[in-house]
Length: 344
Image 1 (cartoon, rainbow, N blue to C red):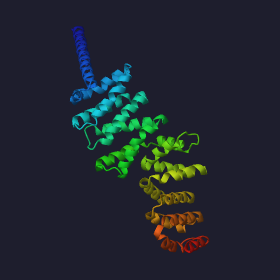
Image 2: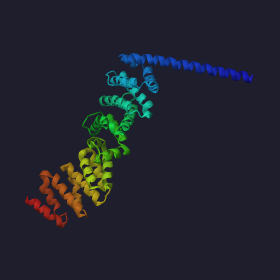
Image 3: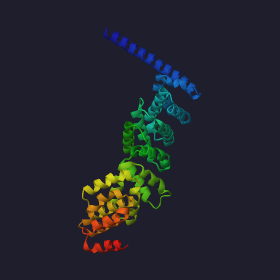
Image 4: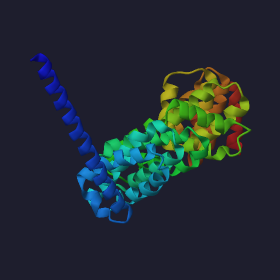
């Protein structure tokens, strides 16, 4: 009796598996048919939620079977739908691209990654609402950007996204507060230490053919990049490298000032204070006087000297009154400079 029941259970399981396989095959054929329609220009099929759910898996199977060219051709078509005025098309277009990215991310196929990245970047730049699937798409965009930044060949392709993210973060591009916060988090997630270290090494390397791209990327990677640049500056034993780093740091004033202020609060060694004050002088912003003036009476003469030079450079029409304030604060050896300044 028990043997008979076991046979029945086994037969039932086989029947279930046959039905399951048949359903999988049916769904695959159905999705294949819709993909064909979509490829032929019928974007309305993308409004079907079941198609949007299954298309990513279907395209992944095509890739596994070696039909990579089809992926490169069809992903931009989904990207176009992700820019459509119809909300359903946008949501489902983004959903397919995000799903395919999730499935392909382990392949390390940078050419395919670039195609996915471009589609999501175009969508992200134009999107003005938090649509369904927004967070997942942003996560995949961050992953793709990190993958591309890992290879110098693709650095230039990432630049437009980083500029956009940085512009939203700083308010140059106006966006809803929730989208602005998402942009900041996205930029922060991209700016990993390994990526920043790689970009900084490239920027400092004399052997690099074009350090300018590394410079531009670092200038748009936000506060984390500034912190990493400062840390590199603090520990660098090369005068040439320090001068290059000091030149680069002031290029993003909105990111730099809070980081420099926080650095000074930690009361670092004199040479770090001097470097920070030099960076402030390069910003050439009169409003930063209060950040520098306390160091006119610093115990190290070299810091006083740098503070005096900085105030002379950034003060503009307030130079005379600020020199009068500085006169009783600085070391006697520096007072002659102030007196000569009055003479000029």
